Image 1 (cartoon, rainbow, N blue to C red):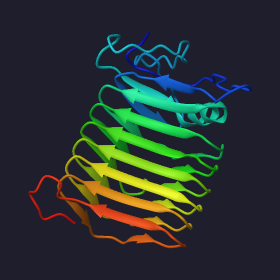
Image 2: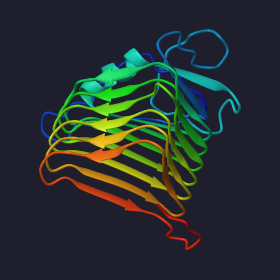
Image 3: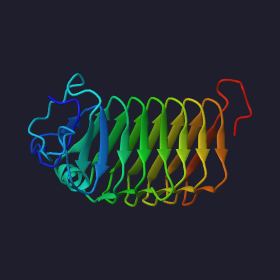
Amino acid sequence: GKNNLVFDGKVDLLAPGGNTGTLLLDPQNIIIQAATPDLNGDGTSLDLTTQNIFFADNPGATSTITTPAIIAQLVTGNVTLQATNDIKVNSALTFGTASRTLELAAKHDVILNAALEADGTNSGFKLSADNQVSVNVGATITTTAAGGSIDISAGKNVNVNAALSGSGAPSTINVVAGQDVVAAAAIDVSGANSVLNLIASRDVISSAAITTSGATTVMKLIADNDGTGPGV
């Protein structure tokens, strides 16, 4: 196994007699970019040859996963990428397969520097970090079909500096922070029967529009669970 990872291959996760599988990869650091994978962090551009990536191997190395490889994997199953430190998305990623989730989970930060979009029904994104999730300027997260979902959680802060949008009917956006949700960009669900939840143990702070539209949509803003104020 490797503690770092470049993935530029394909594994068939389809199950004709049951639910599709999930591809699980868990190096130390992950960078998602358009091209130039690097399995060992040594510049040799090797491809992944095993699905077992162990934390103890090659500590401190940085790994690269290509967006085309991730999109190809999402055709046959869900994709879960775990890192013991950071995950950075540096290249835009759009996929259209139905009933798929791309999950990014980091023990430190998840940092989005490029846009994510899911266009398939019942598809979306799950981002979680023990420290912070940062959605940086230009790194919009979008779902466009019925059942689309965006789930973001952080042990400390979730920083939203690019729009979060769900336009399918219904759509769901959940943002949960152990400290603060700080939104400097619009957050919107526009399909009927949609749900928007912003939940923070300390504060929900927004300098941009937070909106819902469509019949029987639900918005919940919950803050100050720790009693320190000011809340929303």
